[in-house]
Every structure is written in C-alpha cells, then in structure tokens.
Length: 82
Image (cartoon, rainbow, N blue to C red; front, side, top):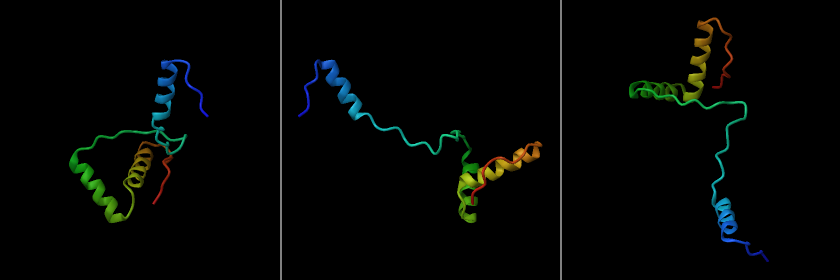
C-alpha cells in the first residue's frame, strides 16, 4: 500500500517526477553533438551521394573532416565508418 503525501507540494513533486520523460540516450559519452545548417542544394547533394554510395551521411561527413584535417597538416582523427 502506498503512503499518502504529507502535502500538496509533495504530491505535485512526485507526480511531476513520474511524468517527466527520460532524456534521450546519448550516442556515447565520448562524442559531442554539432548542429550544421546547410543550404538545400548542399543537403540534397549530400543525401544523393550517401544514397548512391550506400553509406550514411555521417560517414561521408567524417571522411570529409579527415580530408580537411590532412589538408591543414593535422592527423586524420575522425572515425571512418562505411
């Protein structure tokens, strides 16, 4: 049997805590999220390339980041996935 809350504030706090959605699971604790705003033509071309290559847009972007790093004399560190 559950106990009655001592006050309305206690009852509301418990109700709010029970109704609160769980946070979305992060991909990994060692990754960071980056929002990228692209013009529609760039987005469309990226989607088309990913579809044609049967790869994810993410893997194409990671490949591009590694090329950028190398171009600027940095080691490629972005994980490469197919």
